[in-house]
Length: 287
Image 1 (cartoon, one colour):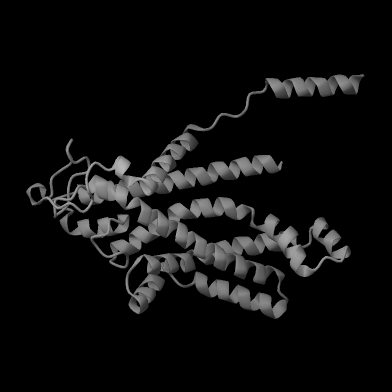
Image 2 (image 1 turned 90 degrees about the horizontal axis):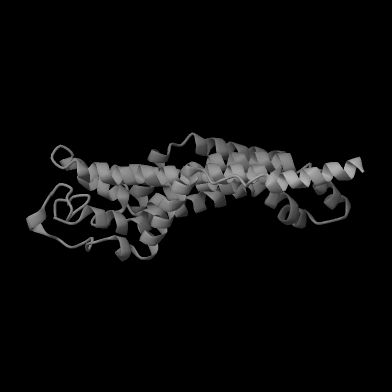
């Protein structure tokens, strides 16, 4: 009777306990991501002007009710250009993270499961990639293939892949000797089946959070490389290209740098907040 009573009390307490509310920061990040999704799918809903429309009578106009972010040297509305540049900037961030994940999974699994020679080669390759700065890699790829979105994607993806690969390697090393893997081996399952059904799902679960955090990081890297002239060529409204185009006029038109930079920071913070919230939820669910 005592055990039954205790269980009933625990159930009643669980029913009374309200579910944890979504933090304000996570809700704000969700709002930002919804606006990003609208800007990607239907930018005309948010943009009041044509991003490529030239108005020489409104050259370098400061922020106003007519132009919320001001205008550039050609009189183009900066707010509309930022909105229309979301698709390209976010695409570069997602593409770079995708390239990084593919490389990280291949190198991490090779380093965690291979025998001595294979593991040593994979580990040394990860160390070599770590020692190669992303900016130098961007310069190298730009000199070979020319500036563009694809160059940014591969330069950033290869640059951030070593960190992801170390995470995958650590997870693989922790999972490969787990009891369920030993049980599957004892049952005669093939190595490929064990890898696909047991090792990979458990080892790659933390990469969901890491990839979410990495999108904001990749967007910042892309903007930094584009600011150095290694990104998308104008008149594309990609955020880094907007920063590059406005740096010459920073003393007379501060809005050309401030507003695109603020958008980049807000988007990066939104993805970082979402990644942390997602990581906390997954950690709580695994307990």
